[in-house]
Image (cartoon, rainbow over all chains, first blue to last red; front, top):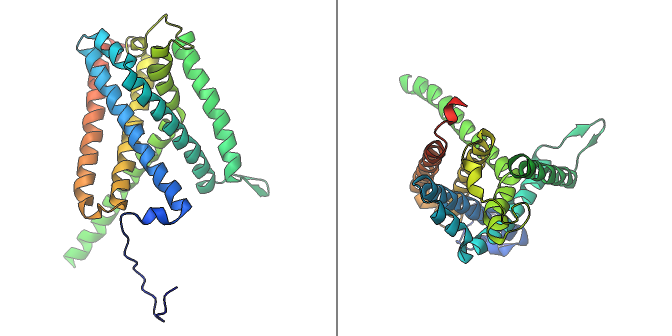
Length: 130
Length: 134
């Protein structure tokens, strides 16, 4: 605390403000995972452009390149992190009232994770296995 | 007086635009959360490494060629993720010291989003020309 009786309401933020607190760090990591969400989309659109211009092998070689596989692993981890934190957030923002009890964020997380597994399997079944 | 009327008309319009953009943003968040992981797994990991469900038999280009369901899945997932990802990333940049560039970042962000979505739709239509009649 400062010694002033009148507190300064505006604290000057440096660009590293988020390192001062674990919650801020978590928040910032979550914000930066969005970069991978966006990058994967852009790389995929680039891949489609190869495919659309008639170069199927170029598209497949792009997917098979070690750099792309490594990037996909990182992107998958970050999108799952995004999904988990997003589900938890949903539970905080939109709690569901059932009778007298209100749902907790972790319940929303679990319910949505189960839904994520079902949706993922459904996508694979509908698009690939069927 | 006239300025007051103008402001009163302006405010809800801007607010409505913001509400729509934030609505798409959170819709994109849902899509990125539910559909993007399986999409990355299928195209970026399962296919090149020959894992289930591909097992070396097919390649992921069939996703965007021919079936309406596959094309819709790719469009919705990629467009939603792009919107959500870029929107969030440009706002994260303003939080680490680039606040004075806010306007420019927003403009660049929306440009990337809309150019990306238009290109995505264009390539999907080129790959499945019969799609509009399906």
